[in-house]
Length: 281
Image 1 (cartoon, rainbow, N blue to C red):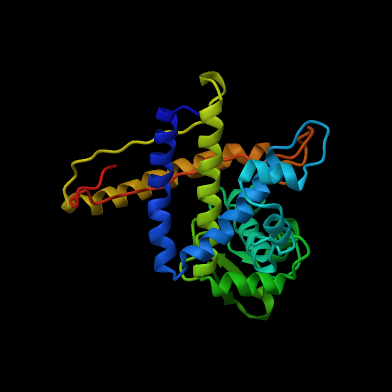
Image 2 (tube, rainbow, N blue to C red):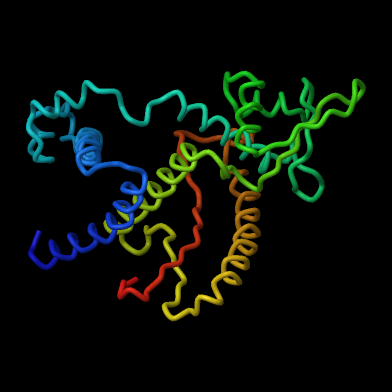
């Protein structure tokens, strides 16, 4: 790597890490704790994404790629993977249930809005929704988790109608659970970084969508209006995308044929930054 490109990379990494450092300090994570996680990420990336053709990745090659000695690599590889936890799997299932509720026409009214579902067994019930999207997790466990996250409301309509479950949110965005917010944050940022990495290597014809609209001289008094309108318009856009994108998922469209299993989507976020302290966008 030549010096000019190296300097540009250093500047880009600093700009990327600066808000991350603030987030970690706010949550009480020290540099040494971060460095331990960063080493594990380097090792996993080198092992999984940079093997030689038709050869098993060796500790020596991982050491050469990462600059981490073999003894340290062996130590870290014996530790549990930070993201392979039961809590993460449970959260993923809750997310799938809510997303299925929003996008699957079997659980929508004539306007495409999520139906209020009967809790008990039967077509178009909450139990059926969990069976389709929650894997082998008990219905009660999913319901309790969504109640805890304030994502659903349960009402009792008497013995004849039974209990019914209504979705209170427009998507799986927990309002109170910090652990789940952190999981969603990590997924969103990782998705964006993978797109950026792809676009750095790809030519224009193969580049993935990566667009930003921003202005740098906005009065503080205008921000509330910008936030409100952004939220309204983004919700409309995402609902339209959800309707057509779900047709390409075999979990929703059982008639769809094809090979492999991929995850694809479009992420949207709002940002604002004070530039009064001399910070640069």
